[in-house]
Length: 428
View 1 (cartoon, one colour):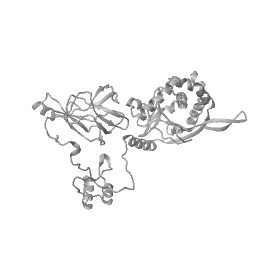
View 2 (cartoon, rainbow, N blue to C red):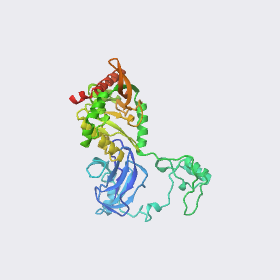
View 3 (cartoon, rainbow, N blue to C red):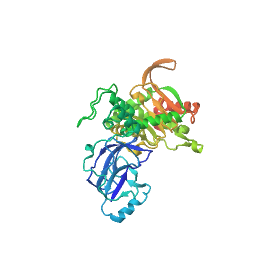
View 4 (cartoon, rainbow, N blue to C red):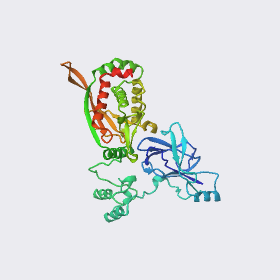
């Protein structure tokens, strides 16, 4: 009989994923726990394991296609059940997905995966199993009746038109552009001949789609207010310089961000409203007892925010090690879901590239986000004398529904005190 394995819900609100690579092919024997496909979601790139032993009967979807959670991924031919038992099982209403513990080395997800229910079977048959390899089957375009009618009117073979819509859907603009550039239609054995286009189209990655949704949701849901300050950090620079080489010999990169994270966490202890979120549905404020800081990391695919946990309780050395570890994992796309969960406050360091002040977008539903600018040498006044100082620009964006201006300013002052006297952080 056939077992239908559906794209599982791997948690964190993931609703779809892109097929990056099939590890198996039709007719191949597979074992339970063996990776069958690499999927890109809006959170992670991860391998999906097979839930059953058997033989691959059918693959659904090609590499590069986006599928939804609960869409079929593949059918597995399972020996041992046939005849009336298989027919009876196939007629049963599929059970709701259940959670099975997964702890497989090499997979990007450790925890639970929702898998298809036990009744998600089909009786054995050869239907839907063409002998021709998928790549050689004639492509049938995904398009609406309106788009197909437009293609007929323009004399365009819609099956040759590259689609730019969701899932490769052919849009009216695709057909119009295809006709305008004088593509040869119906040439036996030949592909479309396209003239140089004035624009280039790049499909959105799952990460970029998520960034777009989250940024709009944050701006629509939170009342943004941004507070700007500069803090003189010559003592911090001296302290880092005194210990930088020793840390480096021990394999630890001591960055300014390590101190900023620690100072932020200690300031959050004193101002718990900054470490909260609003629950309007139940009319309450949710104050987080743990301080887990999100680290905004710039990658080629887009902004990723892994999490450093309990920052107020760990040493600056441990923070420095974690920053390097998570930044590398983010850029290599090896982050797991636990690396991305439960942030209570976010820090973004755009100053490492360029920028003095900014208006960072709150990582909703958090109450605030801290933007860190570029350190600058500047004249400062100390005891009525002018000297060369080092100014660190800070931009604090808060959800004004949760945090009043006075509380935002008090938090900023406490943060600045720690950064001006970093040795005080080592005594806490």
